[in-house]
Image (cartoon, rainbow, N blue to C red; front, side, top):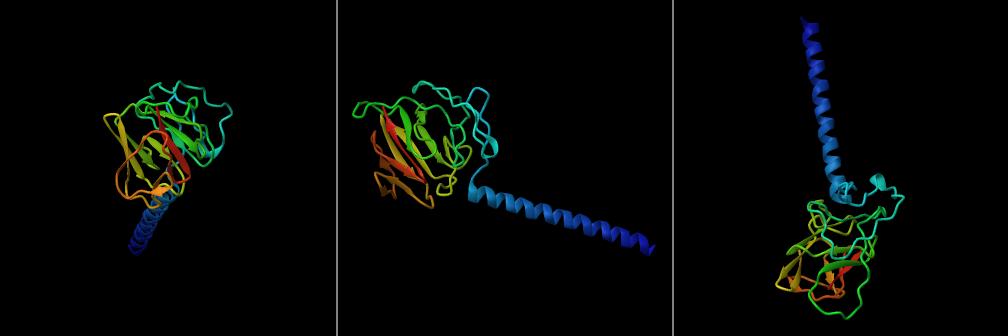
Length: 194
């Protein structure tokens, strides 16, 4: 009878140890995700593939017209690994007027990438559900948001750790964002263009 209770006790100890290690690994995974951002993922079949594990994709992304709508539910992924990125539009001529129709990344690993501004708001951060996903250690999970009111866009920093800079100045409250005004988030700089 004592052997049976010792065996039961041993099984319970091993089960508890297994549960404890599962908890430890889940905490480590959550910390890694919070510190280094979400893992690089593949976009839908119709979009440009992003390399998994940081290895570059052999073929460059196909050009897409700047005004072409993006597929719903997919966000461009900006990664420090230099994986394939969404298509880059042609560079507009400085000084052309009109309301902003695209967000163009000027510096960072996604330099030249163009994102159409079809919705009334754009979320920016490391979170996979952001409109523009920027994965670097200086970008918060929910970093900033762009919002349209008529033809005018405004930018709001969402209490990010490293802040959002507009024309080199860190912003502390929502402010209007005219076209061709550089915005820096982490290591990425972008501007709105007509």
